[in-house]
Length: 480
Picture 1 (cartoon, rainbow, N blue to C red):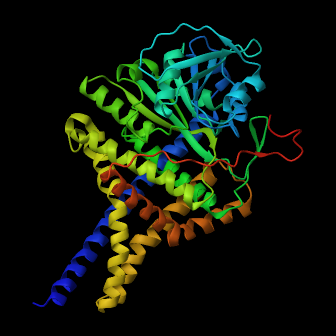
Picture 2 (cartoon, rainbow, N blue to C red):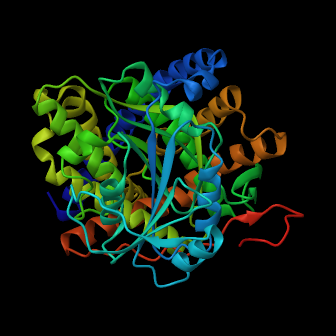
Picture 3 (cartoon, rainbow, N blue to C red):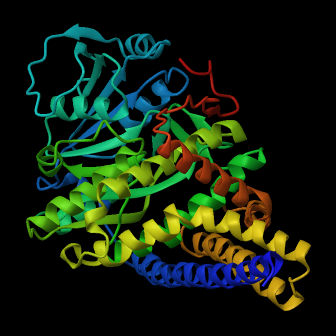
């Protein structure tokens, strides 16, 4: 057989593999969506009658330490702290950790909240870079600001854990805003099953385009630029049809670093956040699963779809590339470091289902997707691409993705309705279709590049340029 014949057979075989791969992947997506649909509707019915005021006033409600790791966050840090001060919760403290910022982050905090240097004795349960100073305020008794040498986000959070006083801690990104009742909603699993719940996360939504006044989102709107709108659809699909489903299957592998609550005791026992990863949230949750399973302790890690955290996302492809590169590098390293969990019945559904899914589909999926498009083009050039195969590939790889995106948008509409206008809903549906023709493929290329960076041992957080929150029209003075 000639080399052309061998190439033709290889291309045909790979085409069949890609079709089967996408069929299995999208079938898992569909299954997760159906599980999520049932869980979200059940959650909405249950929470309609919930009395969060009772949780807030109860003496049994656990106090929370809210940790904010900040590095060069002068544009958003004051609004973030103000939003935290206004949450409806009984007893909580706010600990902002300034991780070696080179901008005016610390100065803005000192000026905005009248901070003074103070002496604070604490136990270094987790090793961190040196703490230079601790600041407090007479006007805001529950606010603490820690100034330390730069050690990265994980190191900053570990410093916050060391200084925290309460049994639960909540990690919040410095470019994020949480809603009034967010803590009450996300702490509910700890109140329902206090001996088992070790971590819980809430949904993250995109603040780009929304109007913010005094640390509160006062008007919800879609962003003006296409890149953030694509991410709105992406986040809805990831949270409402992904994490809800994984949580229901007791296999949740990640709680967003932008908004998650943890029981401090277990986090200290596993050594805190790892400094040797780009995705500290994923790495910590996987390590908690491993720790609790190997010790045969009954536990649960859950996702709650309603507590909302609003966060700023990249508005340019350059910054998006940096973010997705970092995320995928973190995924690769976490899966590799914990490979003993792969298909290991000792780790239950996490080891037998979630871990293989993330390995074969989330980690290796971008390679298969990019190669699939290349081989389809090669098949066309070789004249072996028939119409039936092309339509089947299009249906499985593209149309299935469109269906899942629109399904996530409709699930959002029938359950939470954060985007009440028909114009917004229509725009989301249009972008849910358009993301499959360019945006998704770019993300796949970003992840392929990230895998190559892991092999070359490249490590970089990458600067995330911030635009800052959009001030509400008529807001006096702008940001402090």
